Image: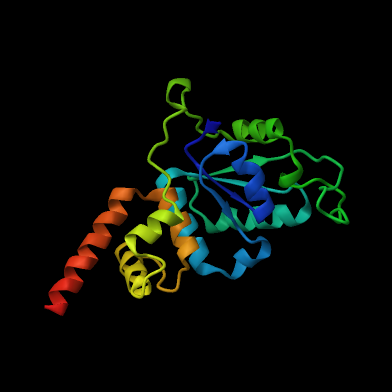
Length: 206
């Protein structure tokens, strides 16, 4: 699978599934128009854009361009690239009815179309000889469980310690934290934060 450096932001979860089958990178969901009122999500997107770069890949209909134009003003210039899929008439198989404009969204695009859109946007593709080796291992929900960030009586406190250390919103969900860490963090970084939390807790208990 082709790997790229930048994270990709799409509109919905079906778009996420489609793009993840085409390229190896962090793929984030904007939630459509919900992003307009989500300041915490914007804060995270800014940090991801500044750290590794961000590619915005919305549908080619009017709603997609409303989201795209909003993000142009909300995210740091020079860190965001715009990828455009072509106008293709049609309807996704899972839908009873097509979009108002009768166009296929990102989820309905063939893999080559998505790759072409990313290339035109200036995505940073991995070199052939390094394409099999990830920049760092993907952090999974199993890792979260091993670190005690889920499934333990003190998981909420452990997540709070990680959120505080990374200067993230206190009420951020475990899934959102997982996405963010995969975009800009490493195993070592989180493991160190957890170790510091454990040592601090043990001192208090003594």
